[in-house]
Length: 375
Image (cartoon, rainbow, N blue to C red; front, side, top):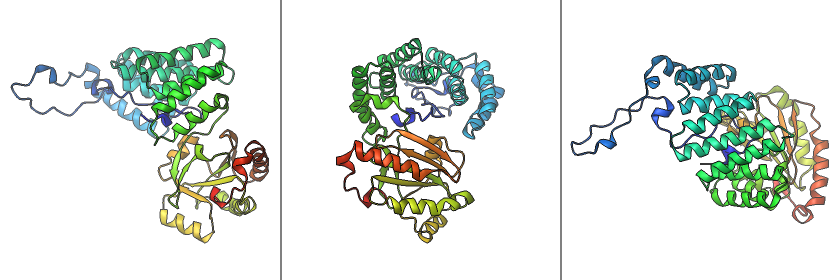
């Protein structure tokens, strides 16, 4: 299970799958089992489907709800997931998970807490209950907003602790609990939780560095952070947001076919030239579907900074992007400082302030930074 999926920019759309759920929970008809040998024990027989999972009406609405959620038709998906939850008598885990996702997307935190609480009760496996407790903890944090009450933080802490009790190496629970503990000003405990989280995460998971940074300085977790990610840029180099080492980052979402983006291109080229050799990394993320056309455009327009084509929109979805051009500035500690949409944004002015702050805060790191930083 990747921790990255649990680290919210707000909260990700599409909660973690309950790893031990069966076809019975999902409301799907499993493939017919192969004929068992006469000597095979009866316990190996496939479990019988519940009545609701054999109902054509239930299956049709569930398929419709999944498609609506996949296409970000949140209101419609919410209504249809409510229907299948009712048809299943509240026993379909996959239906509850889908309903939870729509509630989170709509900011209906109280309802999401109730749904996750039901999911804890319905899930038959330890892994499933642990994942549901993480979801419950996340919803409680969301319900608290920017200024949560002590009781809300205590309830979220309790939910994450319940998940950890069920699954001690749940990186998502340890990470969530670390953030809650930091907000409760229990920094030593938060540090321990982030350390344990980092120890549980695969070195290949880009979120591991984020957990390590929070372990080193738990107060960082109190700030609004960009989602952790790692992508392979056009030149084949790995770009990990949490590996920028004291540099400021500018992320530019664009496309060759976007008129306002093309209007902003001279400005982007000016920024790349003006700030060359400074502790700044520019990452342009394209929405282009045509790779060849994208590459030709880059060469023709001499776009020499770090380039990435977000063909599946996964990175854009993580940032919640639905319009371009779209810019994010991230300071040398990884804190998301500004989000700007459309042309005419004062990107340059913001960068100057962030770079001055970076040089002051990280003199050893930023001194002598050259074009390897992304220019």
